[in-house]
Length: 347
Image 1 (cartoon, one colour):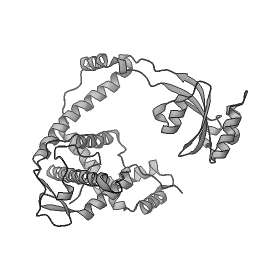
Image 2: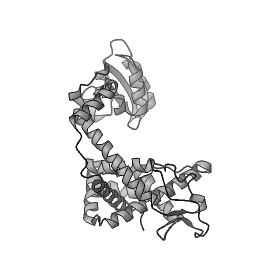
Image 3: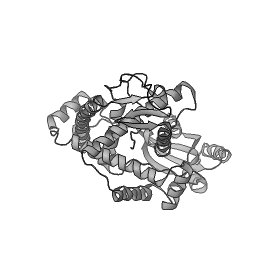
Image 4: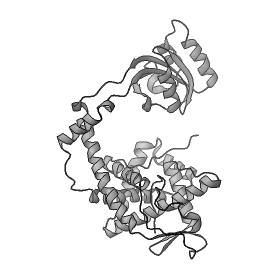
């Protein structure tokens, strides 16, 4: 049985943006006030911030949560593991600093807010509801409390971002038009392909179906209705409609967009099984007018302005922070960007 997946990213657009923004800023961080490793830290210490010691066990627990919720995978050993641990320590420190800032601003996320958000995530994402969530916890080795803590961290960080980036001037029509003109060659639709697909569980069966589909006069739709295990497309002759390559799993998308119009491709293995596809039509990229993209460009420019404001704020906040690392966890260059591990920590 496949392990259930829970994407802990916030459901609301504004919260997704805020948390994503924090990740971007952490990646682009510079100016840390760290002079050297400290020799006076306890043997099990990773770092000290504001008199608080973070232990190796705490960092390991945090990485375990990141693995479960975000798919973060520590390297097995060697130099890559060493680098990962140093980056993870820096990410933990970022979380501590942001948690302290939330407290300074009297930002408190109530238990019920976090619980309601978790209920929505489970309802939206996990087929099987609470039972699937319990299985997720059992297989990942984390607790419901770990998940709720992460939701609280995200919601608190989002509130800091909202406060810091409030009251920015509106993006004007002239700014949107200038951005469009400067980037007009990029203002095109994605090329698409209209595809049909047959999904079966066995590679051998998929190979046989592909051979049948490639025969002259073969009816791909009839084959899909007869053989496909995909209940959502089987009745439509396997039709997926018009899709961009980014909408598809990497291997399937690569094969589909390499095939000629009318060609059968595969078998290709995906998370759903073994796929045999057919290209029904090809549509090239089409230019987009200013009117087509005005709303999206305005949003992009607004977010860039927010990001600039947030980067300035967070850069100053972190430059004044005194983070002392144990020798084995001191980043190679204190001014280098930490990894894009989702930030967080708890005192």
